[in-house]
Image (cartoon, rainbow, N blue to C red):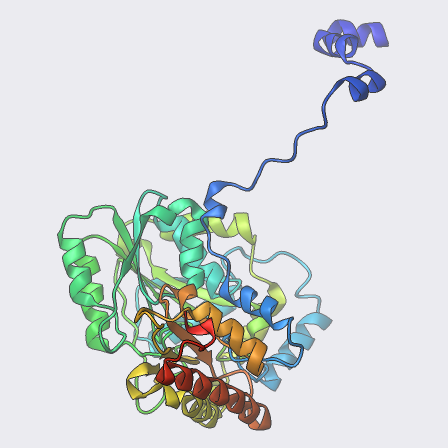
Length: 440
């Protein structure tokens, strides 16, 4: 057979005839080159702030975290029963519909209509809100299109834009004195004919500031995007987390996509279920769902089946969700009190989401404090972790989360934070040359 093979496939004969022996190759050639380095778009992608803080916390094993935005509760009991039933019946073993379970999607469409006032939308279920946002980035814009984020921004939003090749095209819009997106700036930016601005992102309630965007401001942003042909993407991951009489509102339209999550409200952080409400084909004039499906099928194939059954059962527990959110009243008060020595004008948020946003004392040269150095010092000296504001595009600030612990654990964390903040303020007020360089 060998002569036949060489006659039929002459390239193979040439290959075997000229391939050097292993011994000769080893002795005559230089060491093989290293594998290619990761691409430039990943080098341009920020390191996640949460991962950095977890690494620093390894230096002090008793450190407690007010860094990551998680809640202290697990899914409701009925949702866990639904998970057990799905396991017994083998419902989680195979692939499911790429866009999500039909019964969950239908329930979500009904929820969006009844609670959020959204009509003419379809739903795609995703593996958490971060994947939902990344799906939208890959579907709505090219790398040379601009996307607007308002600083301080949610760091994973910027990272999704960076790793998809759009790092150089991100426009950072300002916030006003109340930490709301500056609608006047956006209107001017879009009116200047910046045709490459294809997507504007708003988080409501806001991560990282804990501020709730009122209806008037959200509508103004929506109208500006509509006038100038830009997509508006609103991340509503914290829709259930509003306090003190504030209201979470949702806007829709043929150019609006809304992102939601089960992670925090239903204690499902590890179950990874989010969803996108996007305009129907009849509404926006083309089949956006078909384009989203390309991304979803490539990345996840489908959302986790078992998690979707948990979500379907959990979303029926609306009173339970509110009772859990109400438990945060005291933790929010404790962490807010711990930050109070910074001064009333330095503290923002607490109206929504799980966060308080605080300005640190200025550096000795009058500029923003080195927030990463402060966060590192708080871990090492006081055993408490925050997120440095520079991770969110706002040097000189820190983000404190108040959802992940309760009772004595929260009292302890607040005490650590208070002692650290008081020490920082005392250093800043003395202004001595011998002040540790933590403030910069």
